[in-house]
Image 1 (cartoon, rainbow, N blue to C red):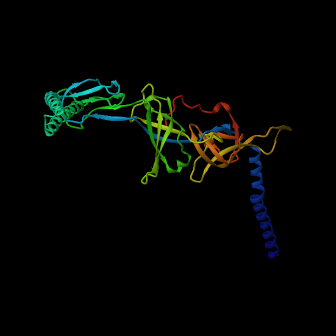
Image 2 (spheres, helix red, strand yellow; image 1 turned 60 degrees about the horizontal axis):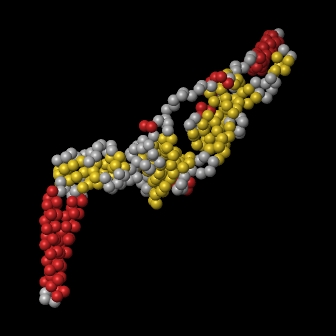
Image 3 (cartoon, one colour; image 1 turned 180 degrees about the vertical axis):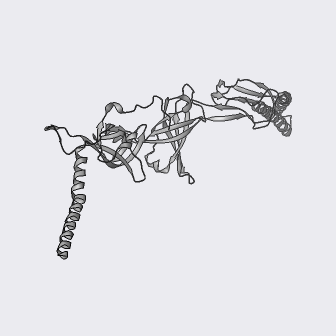
Length: 381
């Protein structure tokens, strides 16, 4: 009898344990899943934009420095005391204009002495020439008189050259800088007196990696922006590409020439340079804010319609939207847009703002008015 009771109790307990396990691992999960499915999915409002095709001209962005065509420090050939300065700081001068006069009183006196010597030598030469013609003078006396005359002429030319060297003139037209000497100051030979820069046209020198050498060519358009002059764009053309690559930096030097009629650009100024290198191309672009950058790759969230149509009180309801994460390969960046080389097709809606709160397959609602507007004045790169 005890065995029968024990067996009955054991069977009842086994049935209860099995039923509890079945409820816990089969019925309960289905109930929870049903409750979750019945609950409405949260819908996040986002800003989205369609990927669009644009025409971009290939560009090379570098930095450069302006250089005068030409630009020098004006210096004297000989030493002496400054006796006169014939310009003011910042003046525009013409080629051949006298800038600085170095005292030449000694050379002027030597010139007068040489002129007197030449006058006497010329008279002696004329007498010897007349006597030589009549046949009463020796040939040697005639040669000595001729040599003395030639020596006098050479002395005059030498003194005139020394006087000319002490008059420092502008070798070309341009704009002067700030003078470095004063009247009465002694200057050594070759000492800088004032800078002279030709400002129109003006050179723009920049370096670019050797990988860009294949797409560079003389005559290509160059655009330059100078921080000191606001947003104005100065345009020129490439004139020269250096004949060698710098073996230390692996960069190549390029020189462009730009017009500077108002002379606002000054030598030494820094410039943000853009080279239009190549023919226009069609590219697919997205806003910068649409790209999520990570170590695993760059990705975007593509807005997709739901696969099923929901029912609302027996009436069909339009399907919602969800997002799908997709990895992309990016290209060149221009201002607030990025070129997409692969991963997205033209016309696909891409989330541009609000990605932080989204997970793949999350429901979304596109809100056109939620997009943030860029500031009127944006920082330079």
